[in-house]
Image 1 (cartoon, rainbow, N blue to C red):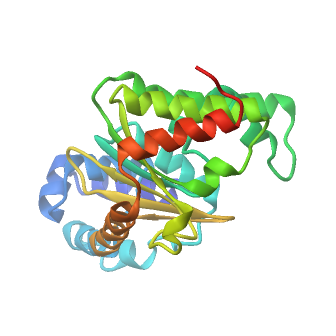
Image 2 (image 1 turned 180 degrees about the vertical axis):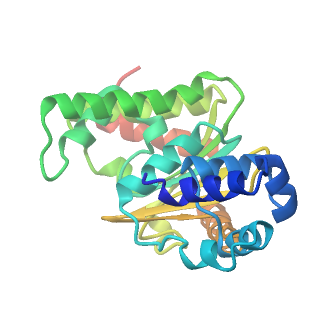
Length: 264
């Protein structure tokens, strides 16, 4: 992600002789939030930018030059990938394919290998390694807490071979059965629900505000405005209330895996 904005903030802070902690106190923010903005991992909300301008005496420069929301998907994703490693809770809604942190190696290759325009074998290998690196956050037995809300559509639409699908579904089922994640399926029978149309990731942190990341097609948006994040949290809660229980979800996951050819 281009970090012109974060670099400029750091330069202005250093020019005034303030540490990150001192600027955070003046702007009523946390030091880690300031650090993430300067490193390019987050963008301030409009209210944050206004307080930073006041704290630094920069007029309305930080507010005026706050980047617009039409940033490329890849740029947003780089920020999300970094934040994912710091989250204490992650809630995913998956509509088209399994969330990256839950993907097996073969499923990830099948998804990434279908990219358009096509990528080379070397590039595909690099992307698979990156995706599997993300999944290592699940090696910690406790943090982050992960909830996965899976639309039945992604279970029914084959990606790669039937064997790959069976393996992927059983991977998620086992993570849920061991208690590492919670998994819920949104069945076709529910019909329309509040999260239709996009993938969604909600993240919570120990020392900074939560955020929401939505992705659909070739568009993406990273939200840290409290009112917008709350809106997506409420939509997630509403959708989850219509999903199958974890017990029933696991039964469905195993049944679909068997349809793809998996046998214990």
